[in-house]
Amino acid sequence: MSRKYANTEFGQIHYQDLGHGEPIVLLHQTASSSVMYERSFPYLSESNRIIAIDTPGFGMSDSPPNSTQIIEFYSNAVSLVLDDAGIEKAHVVGFHTGATTAIDFSTRFKKRIKSLTIFCVLALTADEQEEWLQRDDLSERWHPDGEGLFIEKNILDYVAWFATANDGETYLREIIAKLQAGPNYWWAYEGVIRYDHYNRYQEIECPTLVLNAENEVLYDYTLRTHEAISNSLYKVIPCPPADTRGWTAVVAEYPEDFAKAIQDFTQTVTESI
Image (cartoon, rainbow, N blue to C red; front, top):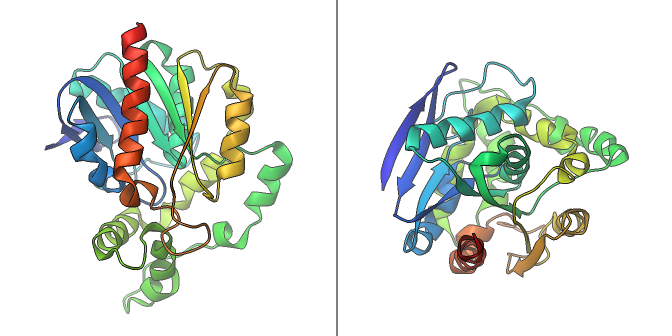
């Protein structure tokens, strides 16, 4: 596995590059980084080249200059990483925020995508967008202080969503990723909430898998997405129980199930070309 950086006008984009074969791009949730996929690497890299990107502003990537059209900024970054990696076209997989970025990439860079996997996505109607923008857990902002009080108040409980109670390894990875994201992590959330998913769904032309997770918090939104995208395939994999510690740790807890779903789909697409 190699850690690489794509040099851009706004700064550097960090990505992990491993394996050989048909390239698969992995886009992470907020506020995480490419580390969320690391347990799936041994399985995915058996037959594929894996490009796991730290979205700008997360992990070891430099931050965007502002939050204007942030999802489009993220999908532009995917194209820049493909350029740096010498890849013309790839299969693109995204989870949560990464799913929205993958959707945007699929409609704006149609010649660069072989297939799209939308893995648990928050796709909202106009009325739902306004409701979500008023949520206390999304409107609260944090700033670091010299005593570290913000860690107990704003970081520890938040990171509990990303790792189950018996998984210290994932908890450590994710708490580091959360701190790396810094206080502007909410740009990504607001970008997802405001994104016009349903109009963009009509523009998707590549083979699409909508991958859901049992009882995942975004289960219903993801199912609606499948119903809205013509000819999309649909699959459900296991997930930690909703509203408990680690409810977003789908890949960390079920890396083989995740990898198999991705490999089965991308292999079918490749064989049909």
